[in-house]
Image 1: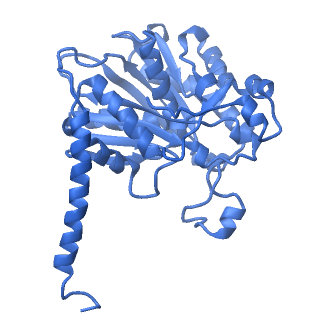
Image 2: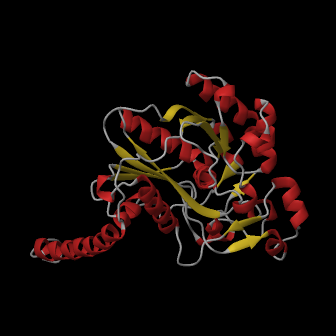
Image 3: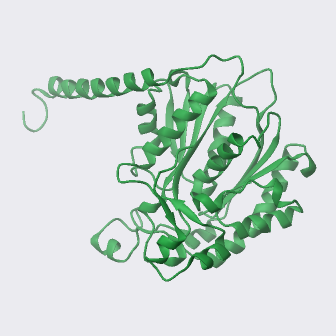
Length: 362
């Protein structure tokens, strides 16, 4: 995982809009959130998280076959943020693309990567959830600015013929009739960026909080139960639930719906706020670091988001292959920077050579 150093507390936000620490905590469970510095972007956070994941998995960048970045706040509309991450990692043999499914995106991406591995198309994949939502939040809107934070989390998935683990089942659902309930209206083909769209605030997150809350409390428990059933398991075989960290009250509602104690839910929304598609991997990393996730544990990850989308998966935690040798990633990243510069120089030279005597200026 990778989160910015800067922390914005509820008290800090109370100086920006009409709210209070008690009001925010009682309604969301959030105490603080991390905010990206000027030199940090979705791609830089995603890269930092991916580097740590590769180091943990003992996997060299040139052994990565696929990189998926799930994000609602990409570096650009195009090129894909994942392509920038691929270049910075030095994963020269990897395909890379972005996936847009809002806060459910990490679950969608995890499923896409696991299916690619199962078909034999790839042997290893890096799945990243990364966001800099602070860049698209209206800091004058107390209904949204209290919720969101920045960060990234990454998983490495690898093929293994000897051990049953990884993604055992998944559920992906969507209901586009609720698309207007949580959206960023400006910047696409419906509302291309103009001075008027900026003045109208169309490039900020717009949310109907009450409707999204009702939707979330309805689907979280049902999606979890469906994924467990698809895995051929019962809920009493699940050690942990890692939910999307949007709102503590929504997580508590899911616990009641599943008739499970909150002690089985991994919760860190108080520290990071809603980091959208990064929230599940960040929570998983912290749980692993604390020793809560043990090899062989059955885990449900479940989330919801704009779209409307929702999804869940049953994951058996296995951790890195124990017999794999450790890797040093610094030389790969240095080589990647050099290679990237050389390729840009070569493209310039190609343009000079192939451009002579051609085109309207000839």
